[in-house]
Length: 157
Image (cartoon, rainbow, N blue to C red; front, top):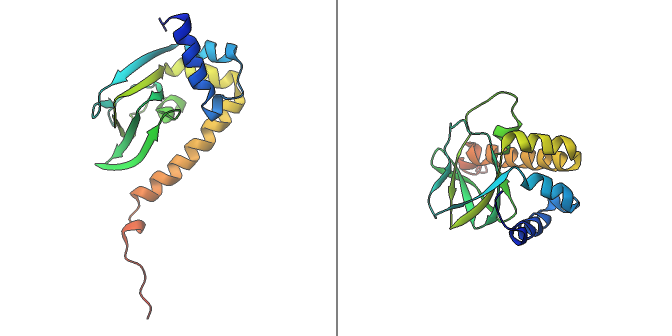
C-alpha cells in the first residue's frame, strides 16, 4: 500500500470500526491491506461510472458518496461503508450497476477484486456480512426505483 507503519496502523484502526471487520485480528486486516491503495476524490467527482468494467471494492475512510441510477440518488454511504461489492462477487465480468460520486471530499481504500474474493474465502463471517448487506441494499434499491412508491395513496370508496 506504500504507506508508513503509523499510516497502516491508523488504517487498521479505521477498519476495526467497520462492523464486518471488528472481530478480525490485526494480522487478518494487515493481510487485506497488502492489496489496497488509498485514493482521494474531490466533491462531485465520479468514482465509478455505470457500465464500467472495473471490479474493485472501495471502503470509505473519510467523506461520503452518493450512488446514482437514472439520475436518482438510490443510496448515500459514509465512513466505514463500502461499495463495488456486486462487481467483485460476479464470476464473470459485468458492467457496474450505478454511478458512484463523491458527495464530499472523500478518501477510500481501494481493494483489488481478486484480493477481496480471496479475503472473503479466508473470512467466512465477513463474507456472510457482505451478503446480508448486499441483500438489504438490493431490497432498498428495488423499492427506490419501483413505481409503487410514486403511486398516489388509495382513496376510500
